[in-house]
Length: 181
Image (cartoon, rainbow, N blue to C red; front, side):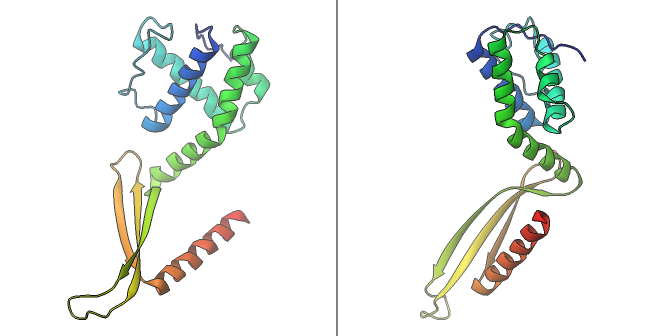
């Protein structure tokens, strides 16, 4: 185990720095083409130095999020920092642990297959058509935004009537029951 050298002695600056590193990792998957633009403000002499620290931080955070190291071990990486900053680091990582775990799960799933990033839905009431002026039916629209690994996002758009929507809901509820057991 090695200490991770960060020359930040201000709690607010440390908070901003750690959140920026975590955000960059989750946004880019570790792609170093997305630089943290404030490397000088964080006390680093060059971008490469910041990248090395960010990589080390993410590695330790991966281990902590997966339960491979405990809080005491995590804290030992920052033993040279003041207790206030050490506690702030722990509180930030604890506060973002669940979000980071979701990112790790998504990254794992999307490396093999398309995974849903988000979805949007709406309901349309159709009052007529070109062939009849008295048609009344509800149509649910569902748009799924998916991505596989680092490929561009794809949108899948589906429209369905009430009967098909009910079948979809039953199928999704079944999936939730199977994963919660």
